Image 1 (cartoon, rainbow, N blue to C red):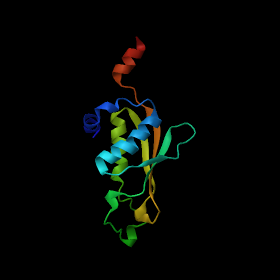
Image 2 (image 1 turned 120 degrees about the vertical axis):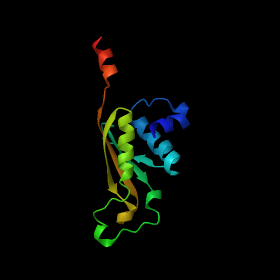
Image 3 (image 1 turned 90 degrees about the horizontal axis):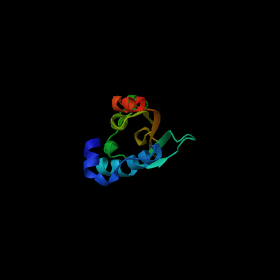
Image 4 (image 1 turned 90 degrees about the vertical axis):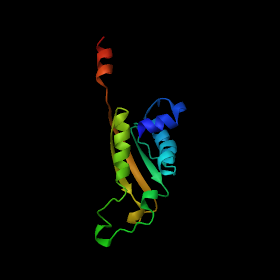
Length: 130
């Protein structure tokens, strides 16, 4: 997905910081792949965590969770895996999880993204040692 994103949005270039990454993810990537824009909100003081707010979730359209699973199942959890995997391809290790979901009766869907570390690849480590 990352390769496709950069192929379709070549003028995007590199993000300067995690705040910029959040903006691109919410405004451009969600629009490109899901047809909706995610609002970026709730940054922590360090700028290492933010929330993606979805007023509408296309993965939840026409879905009604059975009562026994309504409080246990995060139906759209694949979004968390896609975000985590995509950011990992960009050398960012993140924790991604749902805080709220329209399917669980909340007024919106909120996905929390927390940066754990920036991963240096072998090439960068070799350059730093020189």
